[in-house]
Image (tube, rainbow, N blue to C red; front, side, top):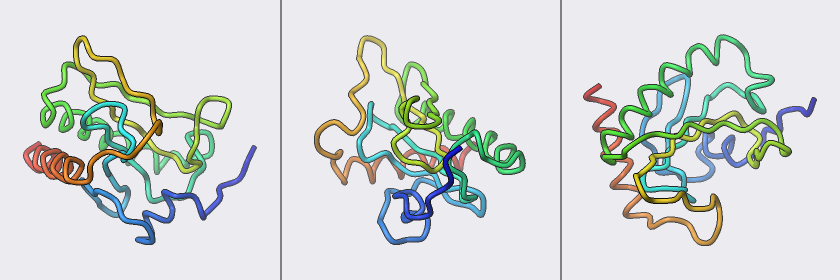
Length: 143
């Protein structure tokens, strides 16, 4: 099994070395907008505990994280008026993982609209990401 690499982009974001469009943060996790969204409102949940992915994450970190994943999914659906929510989580390169820090994708699904390719092309508009982060954060506060 591969080991955790502390210089991955999500670890740098958690340390404040790289900016993000923050939706929510507590002592366990950071929720932020994906800058290469597959759909409008694509959100990431990143635990603060260092783990490469689900395969090496501690049970305590996972049990603290999963209720937040559900809350974020509900908030994203409400804030974006999505027709559904896709939850994605990848483990190792062969499975599609590109950032080797455990994270969950909450991807809004809209009827009749295909998902965009992830990290294909240019990043999303910063103003739109900021507005979505604020709207989703508001829904989390009301939940």
